[in-house]
Image (cartoon, rainbow, N blue to C red):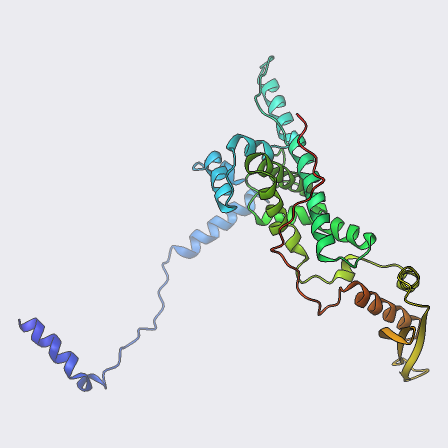
Length: 324
């Protein structure tokens, strides 16, 4: 009871302790063994020399099938673990296993292991069809040349390997080299798409492509992806095809002539309608910039255009069935 009374007294009378401040001990303590130990560890590391990165599979607690199961759960997909392992198995890894058994003296080696060549080919076909369908849906006014440029950007080896590495595929790949090459990462990602199709159907594969590949178009400068070599000639061709009239560049303004800070403002007109405008240090550069601006307006790919719809339900109808 005395302890309870003391506690209540401290709670109900806090003003008595307003002048009490905690004392901070700012002295620093270092163990005498820390510095010699760090020097010794550094000396041993320097003696070993530069070390190659070690794969995560070299750790004692590594469980490959558990990691495959966790990979599917992260993507909210139901995989057949054997098929998923095949999707991650590179041809170089199979050859390495054959050579290892041959070096051990095993003449009739029977390795029940398949590489991901067939799965990656099927996945590349699905990704190409779905990406083109999504781009045509999202950019209806862009000609085929621009659609192909966007698709080549999304399906490039660098982009696919970038996506695969951020999905945690580096440690799951069975490759002869570590870390794996970009081509191996891209091939395995395409093989995973094919594995999703064979396990959960084409719709799930299309959703995977839309959510992880097509979304890479978000907040990208489209003219950095689609390099138009001669925008003025393309604009003339578009005006002729769409019967918009003959294009006519007009000088809207200039300043700083015959100086290093010269600026020219040019507008592109067709049938007395302003299609686009641009600036440049000379008239030719200003016409090129204005032509690019006019193409952006015609193709609806401006910087302030409406964001892409990444919830669009795509069902390409010309997908070929899997050949048995």
